[in-house]
Image 1 (cartoon, rainbow, N blue to C red):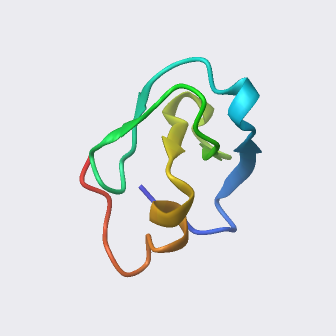
Image 2 (image 1 turned 90 degrees about the horizontal axis):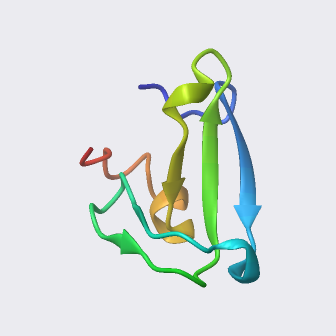
Length: 67
């Protein structure tokens, strides 16, 4: 999956909006309820959207996703 800025739309999820637990594809760990994070939606495959820790998203070029 290409996670470049040109191929995805991103949005920051505010802590009060984070009501579910997600697994970050950058590190493989949980994004807990109430934690602000990034949701990345591929333009050509919106069903493959993923929720990322902000730090993992910013570092994705240096460390490929684990999932």
